Image 1 (cartoon, rainbow, N blue to C red):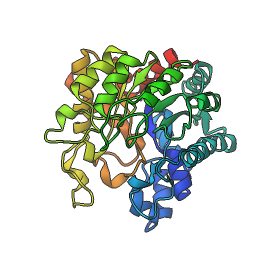
Image 2 (image 1 turned 135 degrees about the vertical axis):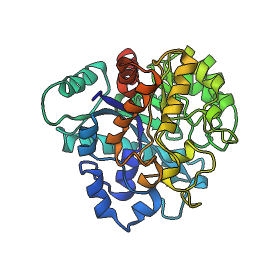
Image 3 (image 1 turned 180 degrees about the horizontal axis):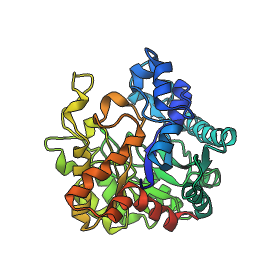
Image 4 (image 1 turned 90 degrees about the vertical axis):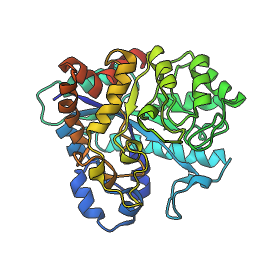
Length: 363
């Protein structure tokens, strides 16, 4: 099996929201959480260290995320901040970054932070060794930048390990976001100028297209979309969450990688767990369609990857039926080969493209 790199997992949010222990296997966590608020709010987990091992998931982009109060999903949601209270947002985001440091300090044999090419090499050397167990490398990614009160604070986030920043989840003072359209603002341009000094990677995921297209022209540092699907394959969708072909071309021209999401609501227009949709309606082959679409636009397999968004507001109940845990992302290989993808292509899509990006852009 090839190494998998998953460019988007909401680990700290789940640890702090539900007390999830990602050293456990996903099935063990499900048994412990049966009937709990965690399952009601977020579905059954898809993640756990033993599952990373079985699926050769060597590197994960581990997010910092909190919701503005206006976008809380339920009254039970814990990690939210009052709209425009950026000090509160900072505390929530910093708590999550600290959570990753505690996780690796408590379980150094299972998890390790990646902040440099040297860190990445150490992780990959372990995965290429014959050992039975390997540490999973975590690359901190800030999803929504409301926790950055001022661009002058970026050095603190960098020094503590953050390497990617997505300015938007919902709309922020920096730019329009999901369901809240709008352009890149003056504050957004100031943030990008400051980010380029390090440089942080700019994550275009969740940015409104107008803002994302401007950012492609404005930002001179590395650019990716950690998790997003192809608007062209979602006929009838009116969501600004998905990536148009124009935006995909811009990302590809900048050398970016796009992480595709195995979330049924982002694979089939109108799919809704709450509305009674069944996971069997969306086979894993549909995710392969989105991967293929990126590759067809690029003319090669060097820009498509995985950005699962596990356990990000959905769980087992909302992914294709072939997936029981993150380990089953390996099944994509058998769906891509019959479409003419070589073994080298499959290796690149499962993890190699993200590894190349990290090797090129980490300090």
